[in-house]
Length: 420
Image (cartoon, rainbow, N blue to C red; front, side, top):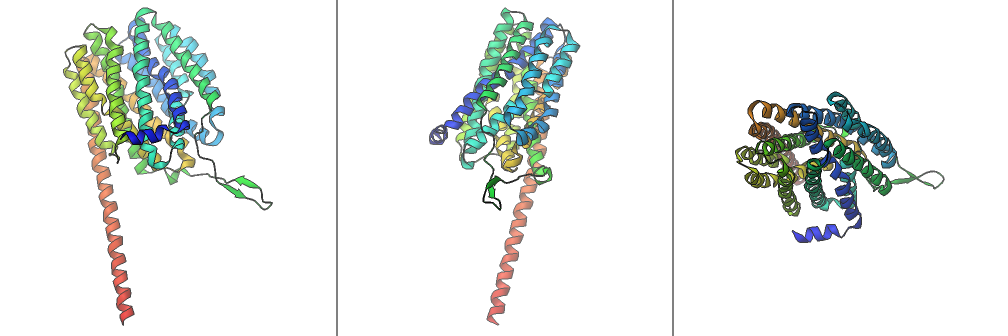
């Protein structure tokens, strides 16, 4: 397993992309948890209300994903990132200091123009390595994601216990703006160099590569995206359930380190998955994620919740990694920006649904219901997806067997005719 990582990490472009991914994602994870604390504590709203703000912002991000990904394919990174930086700076300079409904509107507008950092970094990772090293590289990216998740929320929660949440939220979102500027400056390569063709005068020109959506936006790709959506539904709902549980235990200061333990489990799971010699179906991993999420409802305090969260975390990164890897293999390179935008939209839509779903369950039945409801939803989708994809796999194998049998019969007939 280690030799696979040594070989991949020898790639300087990959190392730069991993470091960049760690830095630009940290404000994303930190901002989400501090936004929840701000709505519940400073604005005095319910967890369902906090989930609604998160849902509005993530739905806006989901809506923007495909068309911003298509812009990345056509216009390049820098021309897409500049408007995001400007809009984010304006919206988040105002949003932390207003009441609930203006906050919801501003968070949604900022979401429509969010810097597509996840899509950019994943494309940079994919381009940096050969195809046979892609899963290992994406697993390393998941480790960078988990490191951001472990460090960012812990620092944000600590800051929110020391200073007013409005100012903490403002600083975090301005760090997000700075991350967008860093992406603009670094300008990582996010697509392969286009093939060139020689014109009548002998001058090389880039060949046009307009890939229609109908060539890749097919059931197989959409099924993978549905699995990604279900995974983030489980994770998004668990996120808000962690906050509710630890506040109910009377230990809100433990939120940061408990989430860090959850993220550490995901980090280890991602490393193990990336070192495997073959991939695992995203739906099998999703089912495992759902099954290990439900027991967190039995926690009796912060220590036991941390232990159960560590176990649940072991399936987080592998599930997401599997969906990214499998999605990248069923689309052409020239449409990868838009495809990763769709994939990201499904993921953010899952998180948008998971947060209010868990929030409503928590408000009605207590924090434990938040873990249970998203686990059940994830397990149902995993079962349906596993059955559907296994059926397609059997039909594919049967079709290949029929083709082989037909070829054998044709060959036998040919030999018989030759004998005659």
